[in-house]
Amino acid sequence: MRTRRGLLATTLLAVCGLTAGCFTGAASQGPQRLHVALPFPPAQAMSPWSNDGLLLTKLGIAESLVGLDRSGRPEPQLAESWTRQSDTEWNFHLRTGVRFHNGTPFTAQAAADALNRSAQASPVPRAIKGLNIVAKAGGELDLTVTTAKPDPIVPQRLSSPNLVVLAPEAYTATGANPRNAGTGPFVLQELKGEESATLGAYPEHWAGAPLLSGVDVRFIPDGQTRTAALRAGEVDVATTLPVSTAENLQHIEVPLPRVVSLSLNTTKGTFTDPALRDIARSAVDQNALATGVYESHADAARGLFGPATPWAKAPAALPVTDRAGNGEWVVLATISDRPELPEVASVIAEAWRSKGFQVEQVVKQYSQLEADVLAGRFDAVIMSRSYALDSGDLAGYLESDFSCAGDNNLSKLCSADVDAAIAKAVAATDVPTREQATLDAQGEVLATFAAVPLVHERAFIGHASTVREISDDPYERRLVTRSTTRG
Image: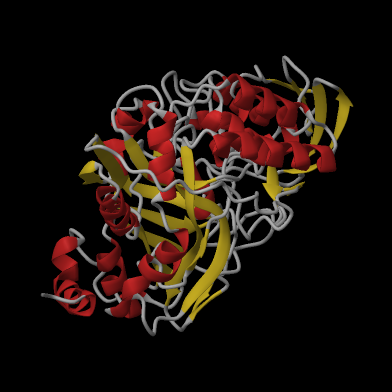
């Protein structure tokens, strides 16, 4: 049997063939260009309104009006300040001296047009779905944002990577093209499908010129291949590395507001029965997953929210049932893009078989699996989810993932009790009340056995010894910044 280390050695020898072309000697191309390997290829040509939006902020191409600090609170970015004028109206004062990469000045009118186009996109970005946001310029640098209903976290919502502001010329009748159209420290110069991207420095960035002359990005879905590329010196930075292959690599590791969870389909198939969901839940050993599959580079989950969210104390443990299934058939799906998930699925499949279930496993890249997952075509799905990705607001995450109307509701859960608890959290305006209501709603979700938290991941970013100032942003919105260097 070939070991993981043996497989890695084989992968290292074959890395150029598997990545559809390698950087020909990263060190020979000059010290100021950074070579990066990322796991998730841009499935929609880096449209800001898709999951590709995260790439725009991660690579420093585009920026939103508002940022998030490490605690999840809003901080200035393209907007310098904001005030709430009424329950449904906010005023934002924008930063002076900002220009888009094509030389167009950044104005309130440009920001308003970008937000209004986002609000009319199909689908509407999750961070603002249902708010019917309308943005209007009130002057050169003053922007008014109104919502159809009161919302206390509009600034946090506007931090979403799906709401970056691009130059007016980037928008068409059918979409948005970020090439040469952002405001970040790096310019998207070329995108070769799902294979690679080339970025140049933008010396006129409002915070100062970046220290790198550019960034070359390779999209490599296979985790072992990313590790091998880093060891071979083909790339300087590689993200989402398999912990099993990263021995002796220099790396950044930080707890993330991210949960790997098991979603059990509540609308069709085996797990429409809550008793069978309870059996499936009870068979899971979170500690074994954290220490075994993740080799202690992840934290066993006690709830949906992990150590990256210190105020979210763990819920009381649910009782474990000793019952077993009766040969029920289960199709368990997960993605290969995150390297530990297939092994997590195998461990859970074996645990379920020991409890009397018959289990079929499906493993594909996310781009191949997404439509079937969102349509609820599997009995169970294992996914990794940033619960602070869209707005940094945990109540909003619960609404998106577990309410009857949620657009990322993988378990297809629809419960009046859960919806009422989530609605209470979403409506809360002061921070302590909102946090407690969010924890109460989490308890209602877990009591349905529709979602089983497994582990909380940590960022595992490998880098060459010469690389400095790679971002350790817990929200995974930033990676390469204007301060990043490669000596």
